[in-house]
Length: 120
Length: 87
Image 1 (tube, one colour):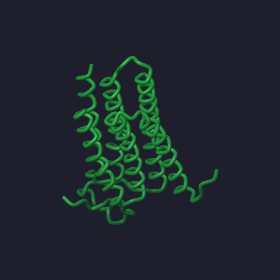
Image 2 (cartoon, one colour):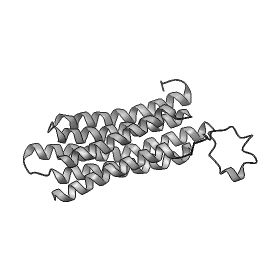
Image 3 (cartoon, chains in turn blue, purple):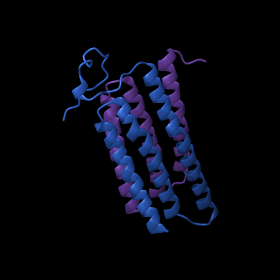
Image 4 (cartoon, chains in turn cyan, blue):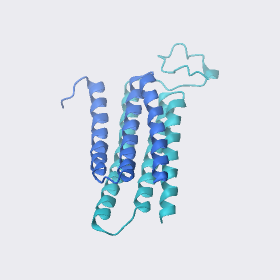
């Protein structure tokens, strides 16, 4: 039980780190939404499951802490996709243009640019 | 114990990378997204730190952060969209 909890904890931390790396390295706002929304949801699920399984005990205090952790997990499971959806909707309604590949750059000069020139 | 410390360091490094994006982000929405993600990472970090120092009170602070994070993001977006906070 404890080994499984440790594995889940490390897996969740790794997923959280990779999501942050994706947010830093992706070229465009709409592509940054993908690592932000998905990895945060998965990372908190794995990490809190790891904490619950790694420290499971049957006295009252431990059960209370376990219940609070499950409450946090359910709360984040609902609010993280909702917040990501709200951000992307606000960006789309404000007229932010998606990034297109450099091959199709004929109308790129005229579009109200949102693309950041990422250094490579 | 050491596993929790390692996980906390990984999440902390992720929070630092998200902070870089929040400072550098070219548009406003990048910054809002990065700050929202930073808040989620803060919740995870608080939950782990509560187990490292065996302080059960940190879990309550983590619940509070999770609530405030969502409300702050939605309020900020509504403010950007309509330039006022009231309904």
